Structures are given as structure tokens and as C-alpha cells.
Image (cartoon, rainbow, N blue to C red; front, side, top):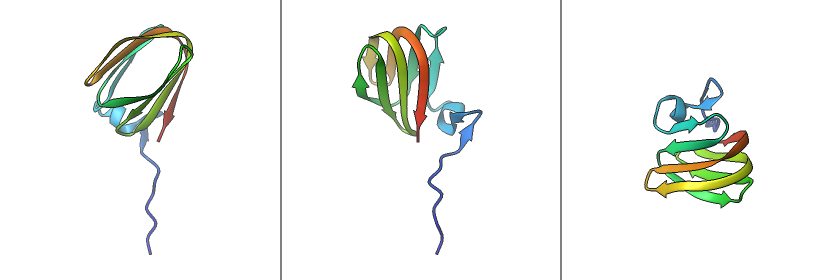
Amino acid sequence: MTRKNDKKRMTYGLPAEISAGKTILRIMNQNGCILEGEYQVENYTQTMICLKVSWGGICFQGNDFLIEQMDGTLFSFTGQIESIIYQA
């Protein structure tokens, strides 16, 4: 009987899909973010944005978040980013 390893490979602290360019994440001097790739918004407040993506999830915590663009494969917002949490 073999056990399947559920851990996803991380590269330099990032999920492999981001490192390989399947999901493009651009942080703009802690003042906003652009995510390119498939996503689904799971939670949105002025202090937290959580997105479901192909490799798991990503949550941004901070202040004054405002979604600027949300279409097909592009998501962008402004606000002060204090932390980013990757979820496998």
C-alpha cells in the first residue's frame, strides 16, 4: 500500500504553478496586486481578499482594499497589503 503525498511542491516559498508562470502574481509596492490566471473570489472585505486558484488558494490581508478589475483571468485591486498567505 502506498501513500500519496498531498504536499504541493514549493519553489522559493511560492507554489510551483506561480514559479512556472501558470499564475502570474504582481505585487505593486504593497499598494495593490494583479493576478493573472484562473481564479474565484471566495471572500472580499476592505481588510481581506481570498481567492481560489488552480493550485489552492491565496489570501491577502491589509487595509483599504478596493477591487479595480475582475474579469475572466485578470484580477486587480489596490490597498495596503500587510500579508499574503498561500493555501495548498
